[in-house]
Length: 215
Length: 315
Image (cartoon, rainbow over all chains, first blue to last red; front, side):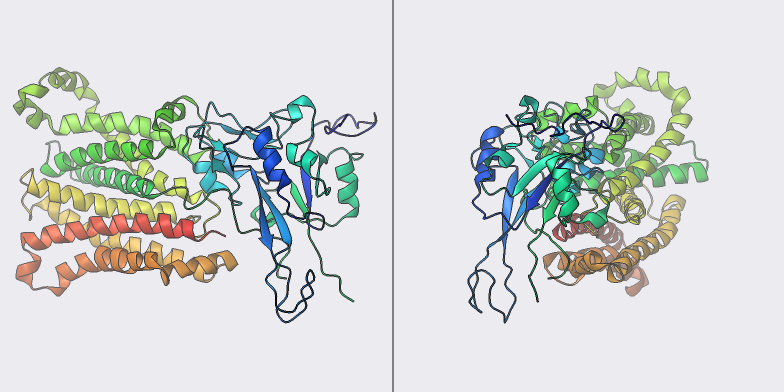
């Protein structure tokens, strides 16, 4: 069925076998339905109402101009969404501050994930994360982050639950080190941005922002 | 649109590290500061007797670090997980390095306290089983003291490094913080120990040890004020995140804690009590204790301010 772990056909370029998994969030496609949150909750057996991803509603209205969504000049419709979740930094502050190595990088996939059996609940990682993308799971009392469903889905050869769930193709997941993967091809033709890239965290989440279509 | 794409909400609400951590930073600072000052004086004056100030410092250092550890453990999401921090290590983590330093520091402080309080222990029959231990370890006393001096300063500085690693908070993420915490630990630790030395261990308020302390407290306080000034200036002249964090110093309730608690009580209190009152009052025991309490409360306010105002102003 789905082949998330590199969609390439044979021609793997030998030496750079180490994957770099990235997720692309296309703001132009997200309608804010929240299906990703529910899928995340279910796939990862999280406490009720909790998911490793949330959506922030924003407005693209500019004061004094017609709102691009409703056309009114005076509106408060917030119809722009931003995915808020672990940015999967290549230089992850949570991994370097974690005193026990519970927040670690999976050696095989390079994905930042948790070893819940090692976490002491000190919350150092939560304070250190510049994206405020980590939280304490109230059932297990340990820190948690979006790890692209490493243990729940990728291990079974499936795509992350949110990516599978999204009906609007706002989420794309794949190996950026594989030049033939869909995500690589997408990033080659689309402008994308990373959040707070100036902090040097090298996030692996990429956003395709809504841009104003001017003259 | 300014910039490209940002989000302002997050997965955790409120501050990750609440007041027990500030109290821990406070206790660790007092512990390391009190013991460093006492051992400085001991080495500087080449003392071999157990002076009242050493007794007070050793006792305070042990009690405060023990209370600090309690705060730390109770702040874990599940205090029963604390063993994991002692079993698993990550040498890239400041906290893990701190755990290693503390696991050497705490037993050594206990030992220093045993040596320093030997006469008191002899007087209490209940503590008699400790005496053979003290006798057995006596040959290592000098080397223990030298090692614990290094560790005490390391613990003070470590509390600064621990939180300055948090890149999200401009007030906290500054290289000056460890220096500020060492300076304020030394001044408040010395103040706490000197009150205990006079109050419990019958030190004369005008003894030569007290005079050295009295002379040292102003330069240390000056260094502390200087470090704070450096932090403020780097925020004012810094980038957008730093500039917005500077608000912490002039808006909101934490700015009140800063100006009244840190500056007013912590700096103003001792200065006024010593220089703005008559010679009669400033040499009285009320002024002595009040000035000490001011230094200690100022330090507590500083830790609370740095932790809360720091975490409230994220980039």
